[in-house]
Length: 259
View 1 (cartoon, rainbow, N blue to C red):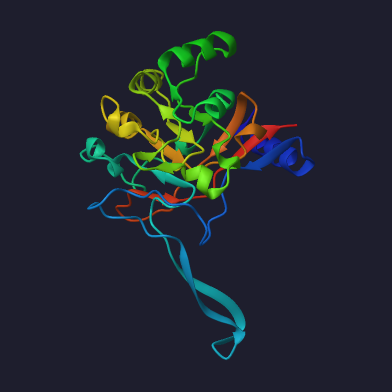
View 2 (cartoon, rainbow, N blue to C red):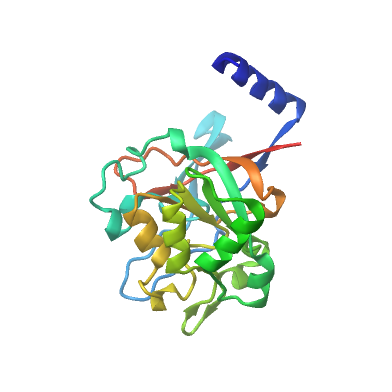
Protein backbone atom coordinates (compact mmCIF):
# COMPACT_ATOMS: atom_id res chain seq x y z
CA UNK A 1 0.00 0.00 0.00
CA UNK A 2 1.38 3.41 -0.94
CA UNK A 3 1.91 6.20 1.58
CA UNK A 4 -0.81 8.24 -0.14
CA UNK A 5 -3.38 5.47 0.10
CA UNK A 6 -2.41 4.81 3.72
CA UNK A 7 -3.10 8.44 4.61
CA UNK A 8 -6.33 8.46 2.59
CA UNK A 9 -7.46 5.37 4.45
CA UNK A 10 -6.60 6.98 7.79
CA UNK A 11 -8.53 10.12 6.87
CA UNK A 12 -11.53 8.05 5.84
CA UNK A 13 -11.37 6.06 9.07
CA UNK A 14 -11.31 9.27 11.11
CA UNK A 15 -14.27 10.66 9.18
CA UNK A 16 -16.32 7.49 9.53
CA UNK A 17 -15.48 6.98 13.19
CA UNK A 18 -13.70 3.69 12.54
CA UNK A 19 -10.78 5.45 14.22
CA UNK A 20 -11.74 7.59 17.20
CA UNK A 21 -9.76 10.42 18.79
CA UNK A 22 -9.58 10.43 22.59
CA UNK A 23 -8.38 13.53 24.39
CA UNK A 24 -5.89 12.66 27.14
CA UNK A 25 -5.46 16.29 28.20
CA UNK A 26 -6.65 17.94 31.41
CA UNK A 27 -8.26 21.36 30.93
CA UNK A 28 -5.75 24.13 31.61
CA UNK A 29 -7.25 26.84 33.82
CA UNK A 30 -6.75 28.97 36.88
CA UNK A 31 -7.82 25.90 38.90
CA UNK A 32 -5.11 23.59 37.50
CA UNK A 33 -3.21 21.95 40.40
CA UNK A 34 0.47 22.81 40.68
CA UNK A 35 3.57 20.98 41.77
CA UNK A 36 4.78 22.82 44.89
CA UNK A 37 8.46 22.50 45.81
CA UNK A 38 9.82 23.08 49.31
CA UNK A 39 11.53 26.37 50.05
CA UNK A 40 13.91 27.80 48.94
CA UNK A 41 13.36 26.30 45.47
CA UNK A 42 11.70 28.34 42.74
CA UNK A 43 8.05 27.65 41.95
CA UNK A 44 6.23 27.14 38.65
CA UNK A 45 3.70 29.78 37.61
CA UNK A 46 0.01 29.00 37.84
CA UNK A 47 -2.08 29.54 34.72
CA UNK A 48 -3.43 33.09 34.55
CA UNK A 49 -4.91 35.25 31.79
CA UNK A 50 -5.68 38.84 31.06
CA UNK A 51 -8.39 39.85 28.62
CA UNK A 52 -7.13 42.05 25.76
CA UNK A 53 -10.53 42.69 24.16
CA UNK A 54 -13.95 41.13 23.82
CA UNK A 55 -15.86 42.71 20.94
CA UNK A 56 -15.63 46.13 22.60
CA UNK A 57 -13.77 49.44 22.32
CA UNK A 58 -10.49 47.55 22.86
CA UNK A 59 -11.17 45.46 19.77
CA UNK A 60 -14.60 45.76 18.20
CA UNK A 61 -14.69 42.44 16.33
CA UNK A 62 -12.35 40.16 18.21
CA UNK A 63 -11.84 38.40 21.52
CA UNK A 64 -8.41 37.41 22.80
CA UNK A 65 -6.33 37.05 25.95
CA UNK A 66 -2.78 37.15 27.13
CA UNK A 67 -1.90 34.21 29.33
CA UNK A 68 0.93 33.19 31.63
CA UNK A 69 1.82 29.61 32.42
CA UNK A 70 4.87 27.61 33.47
CA UNK A 71 6.46 25.17 31.07
CA UNK A 72 5.51 22.40 33.50
CA UNK A 73 1.96 23.36 34.44
CA UNK A 74 -1.08 21.21 33.61
CA UNK A 75 -0.80 18.44 31.03
CA UNK A 76 2.77 18.97 29.94
CA UNK A 77 5.84 17.52 28.25
CA UNK A 78 9.27 17.06 29.85
CA UNK A 79 12.25 17.28 27.51
CA UNK A 80 15.64 15.78 28.51
CA UNK A 81 17.08 19.22 29.30
CA UNK A 82 14.51 19.56 32.09
CA UNK A 83 16.76 17.48 34.36
CA UNK A 84 20.45 17.90 35.07
CA UNK A 85 21.17 14.39 33.79
CA UNK A 86 19.94 15.39 30.32
CA UNK A 87 21.49 18.85 30.12
CA UNK A 88 24.39 17.88 27.84
CA UNK A 89 22.51 15.62 25.42
CA UNK A 90 22.08 16.70 21.79
CA UNK A 91 18.65 17.91 20.62
CA UNK A 92 17.48 17.96 24.24
CA UNK A 93 15.06 20.94 24.10
CA UNK A 94 11.49 21.02 22.84
CA UNK A 95 12.40 23.06 19.77
CA UNK A 96 15.24 20.72 18.76
CA UNK A 97 13.93 17.23 19.49
CA UNK A 98 12.94 15.05 16.51
CA UNK A 99 9.21 15.17 15.80
CA UNK A 100 8.72 11.79 14.10
CA UNK A 101 8.75 9.81 17.38
CA UNK A 102 6.15 12.09 19.00
CA UNK A 103 3.44 10.15 17.14
CA UNK A 104 3.91 6.63 18.42
CA UNK A 105 2.18 3.47 19.60
CA UNK A 106 1.14 3.41 23.24
CA UNK A 107 0.80 0.72 25.85
CA UNK A 108 -1.23 1.25 29.01
CA UNK A 109 -0.04 -0.29 32.27
CA UNK A 110 -3.18 -0.45 34.42
CA UNK A 111 -2.38 -0.42 38.12
CA UNK A 112 -5.36 1.70 39.14
CA UNK A 113 -6.60 -0.87 41.69
CA UNK A 114 -3.21 -1.01 43.39
CA UNK A 115 -3.02 2.79 43.51
CA UNK A 116 -6.51 3.02 44.99
CA UNK A 117 -5.33 0.79 47.81
CA UNK A 118 -1.95 2.52 48.28
CA UNK A 119 -1.32 6.16 47.40
CA UNK A 120 2.43 5.49 47.54
CA UNK A 121 2.29 2.52 45.16
CA UNK A 122 5.56 2.06 43.28
CA UNK A 123 5.65 0.51 39.83
CA UNK A 124 8.56 -1.93 39.64
CA UNK A 125 10.33 -3.88 36.92
CA UNK A 126 8.62 -6.98 38.30
CA UNK A 127 5.20 -5.44 37.67
CA UNK A 128 6.16 -4.64 34.08
CA UNK A 129 7.57 -8.12 33.42
CA UNK A 130 4.31 -9.64 34.72
CA UNK A 131 2.36 -7.27 32.46
CA UNK A 132 4.48 -8.31 29.46
CA UNK A 133 3.89 -11.97 30.20
CA UNK A 134 0.19 -11.31 29.65
CA UNK A 135 0.25 -8.67 26.91
CA UNK A 136 3.56 -9.11 25.11
CA UNK A 137 6.85 -7.23 25.19
CA UNK A 138 6.67 -3.43 25.15
CA UNK A 139 7.71 -2.40 21.62
CA UNK A 140 10.66 -0.06 21.14
CA UNK A 141 9.60 3.48 20.39
CA UNK A 142 6.37 3.26 22.37
CA UNK A 143 4.80 5.68 24.80
CA UNK A 144 4.27 3.83 28.09
CA UNK A 145 1.27 5.24 29.96
CA UNK A 146 0.87 4.44 33.66
CA UNK A 147 -2.84 4.25 34.49
CA UNK A 148 -3.60 5.09 38.12
CA UNK A 149 -7.02 6.81 37.74
CA UNK A 150 -5.45 9.66 39.71
CA UNK A 151 -6.97 12.18 37.29
CA UNK A 152 -10.46 11.27 38.59
CA UNK A 153 -9.70 12.78 42.00
CA UNK A 154 -10.67 16.26 43.22
CA UNK A 155 -7.87 18.80 43.59
CA UNK A 156 -7.08 18.08 47.23
CA UNK A 157 -6.97 14.31 46.76
CA UNK A 158 -5.09 14.77 43.48
CA UNK A 159 -2.18 16.64 45.07
CA UNK A 160 -2.56 14.53 48.28
CA UNK A 161 -0.15 16.69 50.26
CA UNK A 162 0.90 15.88 53.81
CA UNK A 163 3.48 17.40 56.20
CA UNK A 164 6.14 15.09 54.73
CA UNK A 165 5.23 15.97 51.15
CA UNK A 166 2.81 14.62 48.52
CA UNK A 167 1.74 10.99 48.44
CA UNK A 168 1.15 9.90 44.85
CA UNK A 169 2.11 6.77 42.90
CA UNK A 170 5.03 6.48 40.51
CA UNK A 171 7.84 4.22 39.30
CA UNK A 172 10.94 3.03 41.08
CA UNK A 173 14.37 2.89 39.47
CA UNK A 174 14.01 -0.72 38.35
CA UNK A 175 10.89 0.11 36.35
CA UNK A 176 12.52 3.06 34.61
CA UNK A 177 15.69 1.11 33.83
CA UNK A 178 13.57 -1.63 32.25
CA UNK A 179 11.68 0.92 30.12
CA UNK A 180 14.99 2.43 29.00
CA UNK A 181 16.16 -1.08 28.10
CA UNK A 182 12.96 -1.47 26.05
CA UNK A 183 13.93 1.79 24.27
CA UNK A 184 10.57 3.48 24.83
CA UNK A 185 10.08 7.06 23.63
CA UNK A 186 8.75 8.19 26.99
CA UNK A 187 6.65 7.62 30.09
CA UNK A 188 3.27 9.23 30.78
CA UNK A 189 1.31 9.54 34.02
CA UNK A 190 -1.92 10.97 35.39
CA UNK A 191 -0.20 12.62 38.36
CA UNK A 192 1.53 16.03 38.46
CA UNK A 193 4.96 14.49 37.94
CA UNK A 194 6.38 11.32 36.42
CA UNK A 195 7.90 10.49 39.80
CA UNK A 196 6.09 9.32 42.90
CA UNK A 197 5.25 11.95 45.50
CA UNK A 198 7.84 10.51 47.88
CA UNK A 199 10.46 9.91 45.19
CA UNK A 200 13.01 12.11 46.97
CA UNK A 201 13.58 9.12 49.25
CA UNK A 202 14.25 6.62 46.46
CA UNK A 203 17.62 5.57 45.03
CA UNK A 204 18.42 7.51 42.99
CA UNK A 205 16.10 10.31 44.06
CA UNK A 206 13.43 11.04 41.43
CA UNK A 207 14.32 8.02 39.26
CA UNK A 208 11.89 8.85 36.45
CA UNK A 209 13.41 12.28 35.92
CA UNK A 210 17.01 11.28 36.68
CA UNK A 211 17.13 8.12 34.56
CA UNK A 212 14.63 8.85 31.77
CA UNK A 213 15.99 12.25 30.87
CA UNK A 214 19.57 11.10 31.24
CA UNK A 215 18.74 8.50 28.58
CA UNK A 216 17.17 11.11 26.28
CA UNK A 217 13.59 9.98 26.97
CA UNK A 218 10.51 12.15 27.47
CA UNK A 219 7.85 12.56 30.13
CA UNK A 220 4.13 13.33 29.98
CA UNK A 221 2.28 14.50 33.08
CA UNK A 222 -1.32 15.25 34.11
CA UNK A 223 -2.92 12.93 31.56
CA UNK A 224 -6.53 11.79 31.83
CA UNK A 225 -8.91 9.30 30.18
CA UNK A 226 -6.35 6.52 30.20
CA UNK A 227 -9.23 4.22 31.14
CA UNK A 228 -10.67 4.88 27.66
CA UNK A 229 -7.62 3.41 25.93
CA UNK A 230 -6.98 -0.23 25.03
CA UNK A 231 -4.07 -1.93 26.75
CA UNK A 232 -2.27 -1.99 23.41
CA UNK A 233 -3.08 -0.70 19.95
CA UNK A 234 -3.56 3.05 20.48
CA UNK A 235 -1.46 5.70 18.75
CA UNK A 236 -0.56 8.76 20.84
CA UNK A 237 0.20 12.21 19.44
CA UNK A 238 2.16 14.30 21.95
CA UNK A 239 3.89 17.31 20.38
CA UNK A 240 5.03 20.11 22.71
CA UNK A 241 5.08 23.78 21.78
CA UNK A 242 8.19 24.76 19.85
CA UNK A 243 9.69 27.03 22.53
CA UNK A 244 13.26 28.06 21.87
CA UNK A 245 15.50 26.22 24.36
CA UNK A 246 12.37 25.09 26.19
CA UNK A 247 12.61 22.45 28.92
CA UNK A 248 8.99 21.44 28.33
CA UNK A 249 5.57 22.86 27.60
CA UNK A 250 1.85 22.39 28.08
CA UNK A 251 0.40 20.41 25.18
CA UNK A 252 -2.71 18.66 23.87
CA UNK A 253 -2.22 14.89 24.00
CA UNK A 254 -4.46 12.90 21.65
CA UNK A 255 -4.88 9.16 21.17
CA UNK A 256 -6.15 7.36 18.09
CA UNK A 257 -8.06 4.14 18.80
CA UNK A 258 -10.02 1.73 16.63
CA UNK A 259 -13.77 1.37 16.91
